[in-house]
Figure 1 (cartoon, helix red, strand yellow):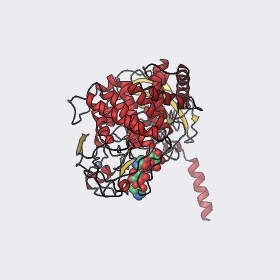
Figure 2 (cartoon, protein in one colour; figure 1 turned 60 degrees about the vertical axis):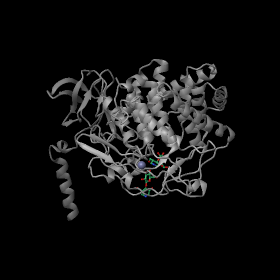
Figure 3 (cartoon, protein in one colour; figure 1 turned 90 degrees about the vertical axis):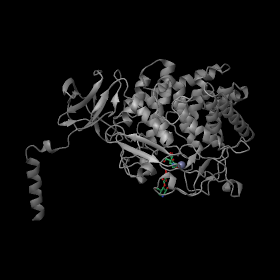
Figure 4 (cartoon, helix red, strand yellow; figure 1 turned 60 degrees about the horizontal axis):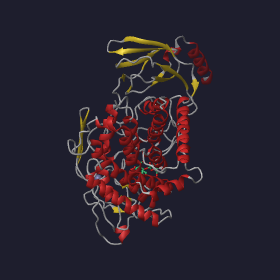
Length: 546
Ligand code: 9MR
Ligand code: 9MR
Ligand code: ZN
């Protein structure tokens, strides 16, 4: 009896008129920060509606109407996705896209839409500073913490006695407060690359740092904060301690409340090689502004390079005393990067031989489409390929040139066939948002070599995706764009008494699949923040500054 009633009710419901109006409105996913005036502009639409219109705000004047493309099944979300192409709109201003009974978040069109994201992402590095009080105002909130970790650090684990070696400063790594050299490599290397590729544009953006107005450009002043700390991570023999860390992750407290002693871990060759690369880069980039500092950096690089030459085996640090981040990976890519930077900084022929010997082996002379802290080979390849120094092997240069363009083509194609133009395609793993932003290094390099603008446009796909043209229709950067993350796995954001999270941070992103992002402070696998991911966002946004 019951069952029959239910069946009748179900049939009646199906026959009821107007059921479709109760259906969910179409979902519109687009870059909720904005589009460059001359760039392609697309939104991904899920759930129907054929015609779309673009309204200019606040007047609501319709400036464009068009048809969405026929829907295509997006493999990683299983959705039928149509595209609304409104590239024709190029007048600077604020807009909204509407279709059926749905309207998108507001977004901007203009030549300067990446200035604020770049500013905020770079300021976020300053806000990560350890060993000093930091503060910032953003959209009516005041963020602050006191000077922290002033006892860094203790040599007990490596020396067997309770001895301190000063190592205050640097950036906290992520949502945790520890400091890891290998991940510093991924962050610093990518930021120096931004400086190398986009210096004039970057210099036009003031970062409001304590050092602003001093002898260094703001961007380099921020990098110096980290390099100063890195210099303290070098051991007497030239090896470099892998990390400076508490034994366990602390609770959700402000950094100044963490009083557990922090220890140097044993050295490793990946950290040592990354140190060489970073300090060699520093010597080059600081030389025009502060020659003595540049010399200090270069001497440190040379000392650690000598250590590496004397220790050709891959030394993985013993971290069994620690429960904190591992950042353990083979050192071949780091050694290649170290040799390339040392050569670029000094012209040293031995280092050039070291680079080329590696490049001639196997398939080493090829770029990677998808890379993170565990594989920094692309950084070395870019330095070698774009070097102005004499003496390179022309056959290798040609090989790298071809590889770069073909990998960039592959990335651009991957974005093109993805429903949300995600240049990483369907790969979802811990930190993949950072990797998507990092793909712009290869794309920008291909654009410089080939002069073909399609690579810069593919780079914009990465930013469009991270700022809202994604499965969630949300920005992945705190404090920016539509419905940004509110609960990142970030101890400061959790522990302070401000409701909003600290601004300018890219969260790690969905994993292990497209639906795997949770804006939940406990979910460090998809919602943490980290210096290597932010550095990639800095590079990505720097590339489109005016
Ligand atoms: O907060 C830690 C985060 O920074 C790391 O990425 C993550 C994985 O190593 O670990 C987090 O710490 C958690 C720990 O691993 C297990 N206990 C709870 C900690 C806080 O969520
Ligand atoms: O980014 C790292 C990711 O590639 C690893 O899979 C993960 C687990 O080892 O660790 C991530 O790095 C975390 C580090 O270990 C501790 N600080 C927070 C980092 C970001 O989650
Ligand atoms: Zn600190």
